[in-house]
Length: 223
Image (cartoon, rainbow, N blue to C red; front, side, top):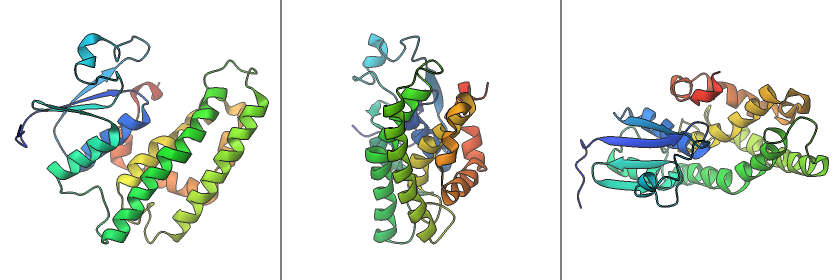
């Protein structure tokens, strides 16, 4: 099967999905035309038989390009990069720079976001005052460790973004870090924002100022 580059792109997403957001940022960064379908998690739209014919695991994101369908966010990003290499989602500084950017994506997925999910579970998914204090402090301690590692990376970066120039590393990190501000806004009593080192906060502010970040902000977070 060969899909022509000008075949229509349909992007299936869920509002607030960090993995879907990563693909959304990639599409916008590349300036590609696409149809955006936002599915309701609470309405069960990712679990319908119709959607499972596109994404068998019933998860987002999913990309349909012509007759080709693909799920798993990192695979989608790499597919878009292979299909539409300009502008690239990876730094132009050679194999080392691109390897660092991909390493940061892997570290986000393996370490930073899983820790954040633990914090989210205790702060956003439980009624006020019902968090497991021991679990929350353990998760926050692990989050502080990950943020300190990221701060070291940002301090050593040769540009304003995680791998120097704006890249797929930022498209993975931003959706995770944005949850810290989401927690702070919805559950301010926990003051999770206090755990963010200054270099990470400055980096977040640089990302939040980008037009593609403002354009892709989760719709239900705007309320």
